[in-house]
Length: 105
Length: 156
Image (cartoon, rainbow over all chains, first blue to last red; front, top):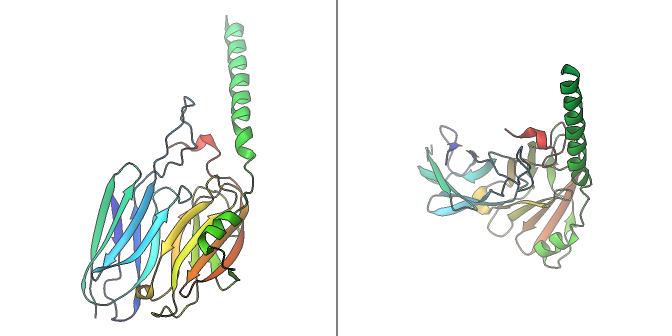
């Protein structure tokens, strides 16, 4: 599954910086019908989590009330330069992962 | 011959329009649900403090499919005093539990943005869980001109 992560090019140690994540996913509610009247089955990303500096720094449990192509902006305190990883999983077991490099000044 | 075809088409259109109206009926009757059990499940009986949460939503959303939503909870975000979770509840959605965010002192700030679906004009409720088993609750009204989940014509 496709996704994108964005962090500022350089962050200050000890200061929170915004992490932007977007995941390509239909987030089907299970309430819609196709043109033949058949229900389109539920298919949503259930969980998305972010790891940075050896710990989980953000997690969200999603419901069908999150719009298609889930987009999140959340803050994380800059500790050390390194990789920031966001992983997610949908209700069919499909998962995805995106990462970026955090440069701490 | 031509008249016959026109009649058939007219009958077909009538059927199609009627069908669409019938299909839209149960959907438009989406009721505001009692979200108190949901809030109680989060607070586990503790009485939440009113306010202390800034919710940003457009006053009028043209389309309920994707409504920009930002929540900010003023907090020092220290080890002993921080926001640990933020719950978003939309009382008129068929599934009112929109999302639960988990934060901590490592977040530095309790501020989140996302895009939510809203099935009609309603109040969006945010419950924030703070350290020390404290809770805050706030609501924001949003007018939705065209609801999510309901119109079938938006298939892409």
